[in-house]
Image (tube, rainbow, N blue to C red; front, side, top):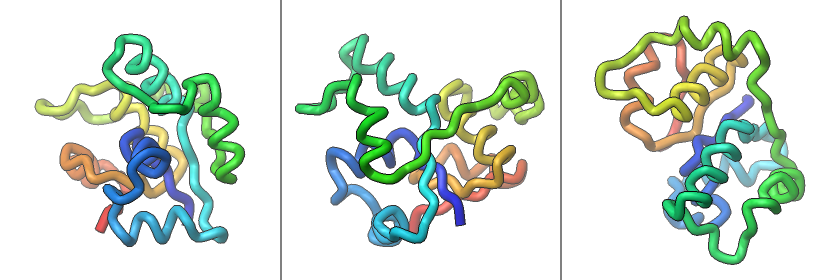
Amino acid sequence: MKYLLDTHTFLWYLLKPEKLSPKVLDIINNEDTDIYVSTTTVWEIAIKVQINKLSLGNISVYHIPNVIKQLNFTAINPDIYDYVSFTDLATKENHRDPFDRMLIHTAIRNNLVVLSCDASFKQYEENGLQLLWD
């Protein structure tokens, strides 16, 4: 299986692993599992750090790419077709977060299972999103 970490899942793994479900923690720690972190997540983290909405403790935002490599995760970049086909993703009334929506779209287009406890993601399962937490 191939898994895409939601931004909060990635951050919790780094900073507060006790917040992850045991199942998610086992998946991430399994050496035979392919774990992906989107550059969208890195961008979201950088923006939130810049506007003081997020603190990474003793981790510099500049070290995030190295952290991804050190953890043997794979950085995934949305390609140009991910951006233009983004308009195909159904718009949900109560969920307009562009970072979440790009993660969802990237996961659907690349057949990745998203590891997230974000309840708003569930509504995209009808659009092909594979979601796992518990």
